[in-house]
Amino acid sequence: MTQPAARPILAEMPGILRLAVPIVAGLSASTLIGVTDSLMLAPLGPVALAAAGLTGAAALIIYAALYGLLSALSVRIGQAWGAGEARRIPLILRNGLALGALAGLGGTLVMGGSFFLLPWLDQPPEVIAALPGYWAAISLFMIPFSLLTVFKASFEAIDRPWLGTLFAFVAVAVNVPLNYVLIWGPGPLPALGLIGAGIASVAAEGFALALAWIYWRAAPSMRRLRLRRALTLSEIGASLREGAPLGALYLAETGAMAVAVAMIGTFGTVALAANQVASAVGALLYMLPLGVAGAVAIRVAQEQGAGNLAALRPIAWAAIGLASLWQAACAGALIVGANAIAGLVTADPAVIAAAAAILLVFAPMQIVDGIQSTALGALRGMSDVAVPAAVSILAYWIVALPLGWLLATRGGMGPPGIWAGFLAGLILAAAILLRRFLGRTAADLPSPP
Image (tube, rainbow, N blue to C red):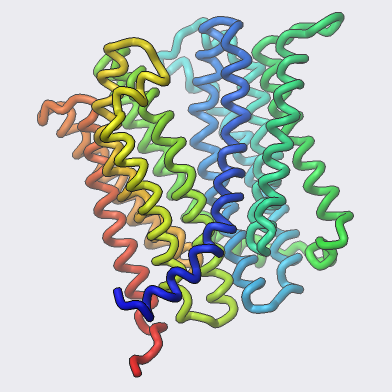
């Protein structure tokens, strides 16, 4: 790449990082409530821990769908912000909150109804018996989670990303003492155990949402965002149409991951435990490219709204460069230290060996997934969501899962073969999505001198 072409790309990197870092922090904070629940429930024994894990696995699929659906608001607000249409932003925000409430209620009903499917999935009876109260509480969690996601998306789109992150960490900070009080019941307070952890999670998220609402209604800097605007079906429908493909995409992705875990479970307990170790490491490493994808979506939306179309490619290349550098470093660490990394999580030699084999497949996946997610984020910023969603569904369900099963069984690779199939699917998705973005922005390039 020539120096004149490199200069605008390098110039975009600080802006991408300023958005990506708080988004990454916010995403990490959102996962910490489940982590603190697991850590603080562990002393109650394996049944409580298994119940929390089973509930979390089911909730993750709904969280992902809700996040995808509502994250389209950041693009719509970013485009209005870039176009200088500040008075349009409160219209999007108010109708987005209505959509968030409806989506959260829908998530609550789906999560609650799915409880009755558990006996058909051959889950341990003692775990199911312990679940009702905690499952119901996490079902209700979907409502404040969805509304807080709307506020976070709005703050990010107007270049105030640390606000949403702050409220996410408030929920974590409140959840820890509430967990202690409600799980263990110090002094005269009753010990509620597992259901206490569920109540604490809902209360903590609700408290963070209340603070975000108060800030929006009272802070002088939010004055333009709280201008009175009518609720309209057309605006809600526009956000729904743009967000639905993203919700379907994230639903398909998390669903495919769940199927992959079920496939790995057929190889035995050690394989399943090893996959849990490797997946925990992989999820942690993926936070940065996921944050970069969110940042590039907002930056592309802002510049497209401002009519600065020649900036779209430099933004995307800057984001891909940052994500690739991070993922390449992570891949190198996984290749060199797979056994040592697995040993940080578990002391079981058989689990360490199996997890290390999976981590070696995760290494190249990190780089490809970073490119794929960033290209998807750039297209999302252009409101191009339907075709990319179809591409991702094709990559996960038509390519990754069948090929992974063949490699694991007929190919003799075992559990690492499942993820090798995902590597192939991600390569296909990355190539198609990047080509689509370059094709859509080709006409926006400046003419050569």
